[in-house]
Image (cartoon, rainbow, N blue to C red; front, side, top):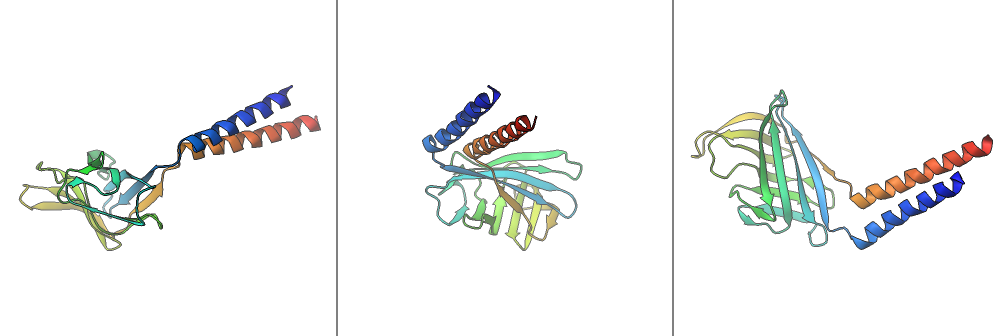
Length: 192
């Protein structure tokens, strides 16, 4: 009787995963990024775009409607992991910063070139992150909104990017795990 229940549960979980992926074809794709400066300051954030319409290279800059990015947010932490600030650089496909710069290769899933995110909204003391990926990236703080800023930390331009798994993929993995558990239980029952 337990074998029948395990099989029914497995079939149900697999059916849900297949139905979810068939009824909700992937559109938005999400990525997380992390940066660590030489002095211990850090930046963590995420961004998303519509993978159905995005080109191989996404290049965005300035304020106003973005071409492909739907969202981009970043949070900064000091070396003791105390939050310094969180910024929604792009929300609803719109950038509020005239200084905004972002370049992403969708095929290699890497950031490249100029990067300028956060800040740029006219608030003294705001933080921003800028530089060139692979050369030098800096965390800065605005002093006077007149172009004067202080560098809090920097590194050699290293930044990590990772795709966030889709919910349908997670359901599929759960279905496979259920199959594995059911198979293991079946073998144990057969050996008893």
